[in-house]
Length: 102
Figure (cartoon, rainbow, N blue to C red):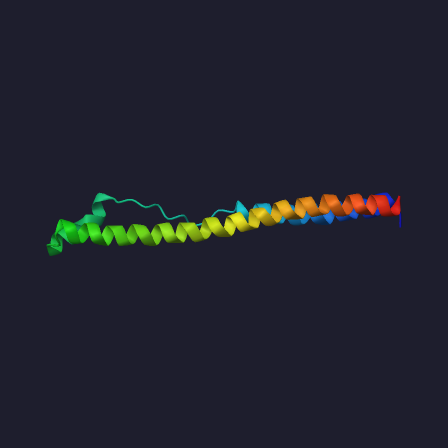
């Protein structure tokens, strides 16, 4: 087995893994937009809910959306860290392979 062959195989495998992790972290996801639209208040007005009760419900709804967004961002950040790790490890292992088989 020649050094360039091993070196190239290690780089190809490592960088392919890195690309896969990076692609996963950049994938389209369902994002929750905390906010309100006027049509969401129509039912509250129709049943006579007061403003304070509506604001409390809205705060809980915002909290749920922010919590879901945080979980998405945490997952994507972990995947991106794995991409960086795979890139670094592939470069280190390819260098070791180059030195060992050279």
